[in-house]
Image (cartoon, rainbow, N blue to C red; front, side, top):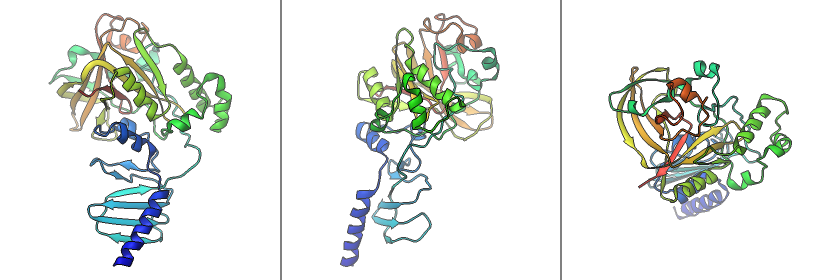
Length: 353
């Protein structure tokens, strides 16, 4: 038994020294140890590295790259080497717990989403086609409609198709992020000039370089670290929380929902971050002191529940007068608060107390 424990200790130490915990999760738990990570953020963490289950214990989620795994917890240790499902060395004592997976190394996976929604960039003008065809248009409403028992026709979607992952701050800083450097960026990610993907990258860079609307701060976060730091700086505290819309079913139709409850987030200073089309995860974040946010319980006619994040803007005078919200609601900039639900891959930051 002693020899077994010695072998176990050696394998465990040797394996952990080479295992790669997700740097985003390590960072998150170091700066926000008491804040659950919303799905709008966890969905952009590389699936080939460690992710987190609902219990708060770090566990393996998915990945195809094989490597070394370590499981520790609930009185047990498991060490395994080799590809999933194929041979290797295993030592088992007790039951599972934490799983560490050494994922792939090299360039980040390129996954450019085309097109992306611009509904939540407030200097953006709507087109007639967008007003009729964009499912996100249904997400805009007036604040007076936000009450228990109210009924709304909604269609919750993700504005990106997934695939892009966060880089670490160090990785992001090593890659140009500027329209002037577009040829170098395209070459770095092996994106063909003139392609739809290249145009998407170009558009995102241009939007990130445009000035913020009056009364707001804006920033394009090229890493999770930079998103968190911008949010904390804008809110004036490191005691922050993040929320995103969650729907109980992966795909839902446009349907009628009934509001089952409304809860206001703390304060009137918020940071909203919206995913952009890019070769890795980039979020367009803007901070405002003229907004309120709510978490809203909803129940669809098909029985599917949702907890949606709603943001109400109390001062829209600086928005583009042709923005889709004014077209749909038939109101003028600055006349009434304009509210919208956030798609599932957007995130709102607020003070936690």
